[in-house]
Image 1: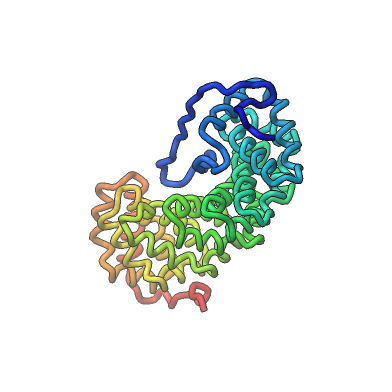
Image 2: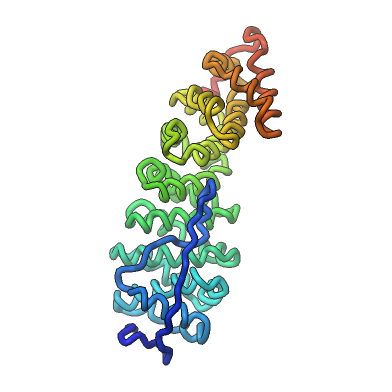
Length: 351
């Protein structure tokens, strides 16, 4: 299925312009792939495909799904690329494409040794996963393990889009544990540590969602996530302070994460954020510190010795309503006598 002469299924090329939106929110919304143009498709081809999406989309989709089964890698690449574009720019096509049987052959492409074909498959699956009705079908069709494989060994774009696709699938509660068991957590931690900004943002969002489940919290701690998060929170130029703190706020519900946070030098970093961070950062961090201190006299002592009380007092007077409330509660804890409360529970210490 070529595009020579820019005609397809009797349609002629028309000039259209497509504007992609980029997210600037605290977390990555992963609303669609943010890939650049594929090497095999000119901007004219892309405009043509979007023109085709409006009329005769059912016939176009059937042809594209048929081409996914082709013995020609070039046909498969072109079909996957066009499905990705149709699903990205026309939300109503996402259900049509899934019902036409595209999901399983796209998953097969993710397992291809051809990295470009793998990337196209991942990206198409991501865009299909934006439809809530498709999420369970994609997961039950066996997409999780191939996506995890792409997360570990794909192109940089494939890794980013695999992280986003796993985030979307994790929004089905039953999929969170399955994604964790498939080995995604260490790979997401690695992406968070070594990826570019967009990759870090996507990884942090996926980890935030996945770590709502206790077993994934433990997996993340074992994968060394706390060291990475503390380093990102300490770097105010990283634009990752908020995102990292949100992930920490989920993790510290378990004792292993609280111990890892302290061990990796997180207390002075958190106190500094209370002093000089934005209002949102201060609010997140005071919630973390309260969780850390509630059941541990030793941790309260550490926080107090880092000089937390003066900035907490200031926060209790000028922060958001939630920040004020949490700061007042934390100040009360830190000012309690530190004798007679017992030692740190052994469960709070990571061997």
